[in-house]
Amino acid sequence: MADFATCMDPGCGTRAKGRAAACPACAGPMRNNGASKVRGGLLLALGLFLVLFTGWIAATVLPAMLPPTLNPGDGPVFRGTAEQGRTIIGLLAALAVFGATASAYGAYMLITGRQNRAFMTLSLLLFALLAYIGWTVLGWGG
Image (cartoon, rainbow, N blue to C red; front, top):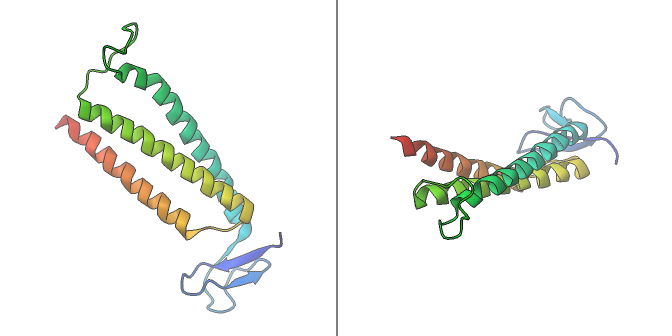
């Protein structure tokens, strides 16, 4: 794939062959495709870590959250309310979806060398959901 640069100004978006520091059309800053690939690799690695770590947490914690009739009794038992249990499961699911989205976006950036507004918007919405769930969890104590 040939090197190219894309103007970072949302109103311009001009693409130029080769590496450029300033946009030939609007003189705004340019983003070179190599930077997106580095960020894509980092995003892919962090997303995979989130998915794997969340899966490990779920496999460790969720058996303790089973109703007493399904829990064999040889391990820890969840003593929270049903609402707290649903919130924990929702948080783990949201983290896993956020990690999977980050992994997919990182792979996209590695392959194409470009960013995508739809992936960025989805990532921000998922982050907002995680922040809301986190705020809910912090509200348990008081």
